[in-house]
Image (cartoon, rainbow, N blue to C red; front, side, top):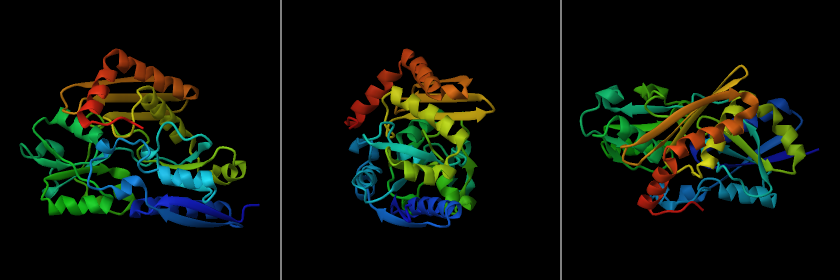
Length: 314
């Protein structure tokens, strides 16, 4: 029996909240075991003076944790699902996907002004090309300001840079207790979320059946199904988490509905569509939707985005 289970996590406040949630949930399910969290910094945490897209690495927030998994230094790694590349290193697997929080983005603004009410030319902070592109498609007049750092750092920069607004994921805002700051839940018809946004993922060694059994209580079937479809959609588009792709899957009974979008960086063109199908065909549905958008020119938009930011996914 595995008596002590070492959990790896980024050491940001939000990541550690997620790791503690995993540890506490597992402790309740397995009172005879102990769970220890080991925090570490990733490449994405250490490079804060360059836009994420310009670094051009799909494993910005995961590689160090995955190396620790492969070496056996940790038994499981806790990630935000939106940070986890669609192609994992050999020997690793997603052992569990936690029940998803509301996956959308939120607007935090001066005087709680909503997106439609922001003044012309308002300065809006975001580190995400996906958010930038979709917001410019909705409001071409906005000035998008790149801000990096963990959630608390970005909230601080919102004030220090005297921005008019900032866009963040609702899940992180809620988990860190900042819901009172939210001026608006940005509607999905304006801004689709990142693939996997709102859910916590647990990565393990593929062959480690003992750890897979331990974390099984965390796995939430409908969330896994929806996110598997989203990840298949992004993988077929060969997109990393730093390209302007949005997707949202929803499970209702035996039916999965998936909506996806690819947007050019300047918000001039948005390709968006949706598909529905049986829940047991999640991956096929994601691929199907990607091919619909590819037929409409999605690959050209993504190629232009990569060229403009001068990076190649690694």
